[in-house]
Image (cartoon, helix red, strand yellow):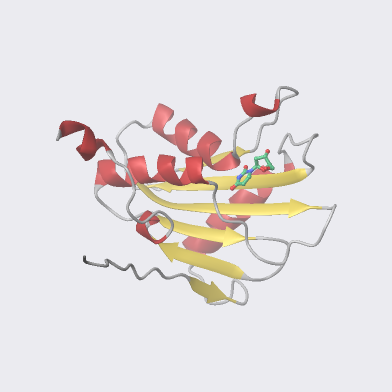
Length: 162
Ligand code: THU
């Protein structure tokens, strides 16, 4: 028997001071998107912004539905919008922010499993890690260098060719 272990990591910042201008802008764009989230059922507002290798930024927010499973997360709205408009252009980074008036959200929100899988797809496509920036209702920011830190042992297209 062999036990395989993973080491995963994320970096925590206490505010935007140490971030690059590009990262600050990306977070700001995610907050702008968060303002227009359609979340009447959960009251949990999420915004996402994607920076492409061509430096263009695409935004998304969660879109809920009376038939709950028909809704979709902010991350997938942003990523699919970017890929639909610029297919094949690598995604460099994605910022995800969340806020709710219903309770205190001091820790950043991390993407759900389905969104992790979607981010993994585009990372595999380009072969370059996608940086993931996260912020909640506080100054705390988490930055993750690549989806493997969120989705170890991920399923990917290569498995379908074996
Ligand atoms: N949600 C997102 O948009 N992204 C996440 O990373 C977590 C969850 C949305 C889905 C739903 O509209 C609401 O937040 C509550 O789950």
